[in-house]
Structure formats: C-alpha cells, structure tokens
Image (tube, rainbow, N blue to C red; front, side, top):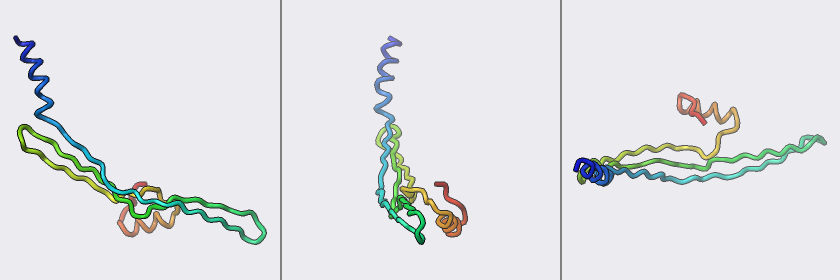
Length: 102
C-alpha cells in the first residue's frame, strides 16, 4: 500500500509544479567589408560583423499549486557582435560609467 501511494504521489507531483521559459527578441546584424591601399603598398581587407540594434530577453512563469502562477522577466540589449575597436569600447564605457562585458 505504501509503495502504491508513493508511486501515485510521484506521478501526480509534476502536474502541480511546472515552469515555462521563453527566449524572445530580434537579432539584427550586418557584415562590413573595407579594402584599403595606401600608395603603391599592399592591399588590406577588414571584415567586421556590426550590431544593428539587437534586443533579446528571457521570460518565464512558474505555476505554484492550483491556479496561481508567478511571472519573471529578464531582458537586455545584447549586441550580436563584439565591438572590435578600442574606440567603441571607450565610447561604451563613457556612456554607461562602466565597461559592459562582450
């Protein structure tokens, strides 16, 4: 009898507690290619991936018991590409007061 009660309670437990997580947002990026040559010297090609305004976030809910649920949100303006120049890193540090990790 105890084994049967344990099996039934274990089978019904997941129905009482469940969670849902959703990743949302847009990724907008572009590729820039530049080719330079100074004087008669060699040609230099530089290719970069640029962020054009990406936004991603995570939201989810947890059902606790009967019908009550709790919603949680977390979002960030996350670039799709790392800034490659020292100038871009210095600009972000000046704007935000601290350096945002890549």
